[in-house]
Amino acid sequence: PVCAARGAVHWKADLDVDCDGRAGRHCNRRTDPLFYAATAYQQSDGRQLSAESLPYVVVPGASRLWNPARSGVRGGTVAAIVYRGKVLYAVVGDTGPSDLIGEASYAAARALGIDPH
Image (cartoon, rainbow, N blue to C red):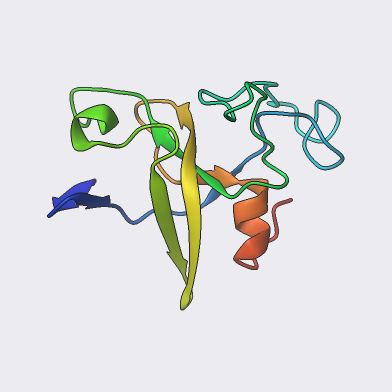
């Protein structure tokens, strides 16, 4: 479940690797059959985010259970991922299915020591 506390939201989940966005050596149609060449949010210059180089999290789309925007969670919102004593700061970079939580970019997984393959 998503919990809220004084201006922050948090949840506990596994980490599924998201490779969507700008194609690169590790994230493309050949390496990921579910690859999608766009993210819900873009860089300030209009380019798609790079899952290979930018640590980002994926938040679920709005549903009856939780609406990220109502909690102040939008593209670019700062996120902290905690894994085995490590803290990685990331941004909200994409949206996913409303019934799934716990995705983060290829770069986030690598930075945390998680094999992204």
